[in-house]
Length: 258
DNA sequence: GCGGTATGCCTAA
DNA sequence: TAGGCCTACCGCG
Image (cartoon, rainbow, N blue to C red):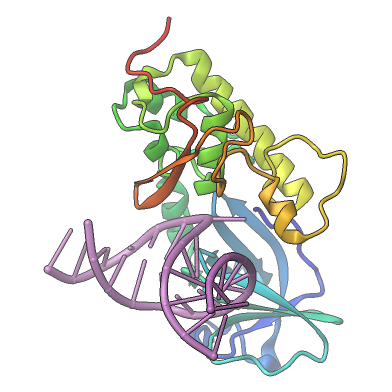
C-alpha cells in the first residue's frame, strides 16, 4: 500500500547513526519531514532542504507506531520518525538510505508505470504486453514492466480477468491489456482506501475475526478452494513466488483472441 | 514454544 | 536457482 500522509511536525534521527555523515540526524539536529512520495513500492521520505531517504519495505519492512514517550530504539531500528505525540520506528526494510537526486532519478527510470499514480502512462505497459512472450504472471511481478503490483494483486487480477498466469503476454489483445490496467487502478485504490488488500465484493455480515476478514478478501490468493466456483486452487512457483490459480475459472490460452 | 511461511528483491554462483 | 535479509503470524499440539 502507498503511504500518502506526512505529519509536518514529524522529525527524524537515525538510532544507528547510519545517516550521520549526511547530517540527517543527531537527535539534537532533528529535521522536518516535508512529504512522502510513493512510486510503485519505492517510498521517498523528503525532509527539509530536499534531503531524501529512499525506503523499500520489501517483505519484512514495517513501521511500528509508539505513543510517546516511545521506548528506546532497538538494534534493528533503521529509521525513527518522531512526532509530538507518536513515534514511528522502521525495521526490516530492503532499502533505507539517503539518496541524491541523481540516485532517485535512477530508481524512477528503472520502474514501469504505477497504476496508483495520477498521470501514470500505461503505454509502456501495453507495449511490453504486446510483444513479450514472458508469462503474464511473471510480467506482473516485474517492476520494470508495471510497478506496485505484488503477489496478491497478481493472483487476483488474473483471476478476475479469467487469465492463466502462464499465458504469454502477447496472447493478450489490446482490450485485455487495457482492462488489466484499469482493473489494477481500481483494485489498488480500493486497497489504499480500505488500508488492506480486498478484491472480493462486500459481505453482508462482518467477519468476526481478523483471520476470517483476510480469508474472505481474495478469490484465489491464499485459498484452497476458489471463492468463485469452489474448485481446487492450484499453486506453483512463478518468478520465485507462489502463483495461485483456479484452472476452472482461468483456463490456459495459447493464442491471442481477436 | 517451534517451525514453516510470507503483500520483496538483491546478490552470488 | 539458492541464500540472505528480518519480523510477524499461523498451525500444530
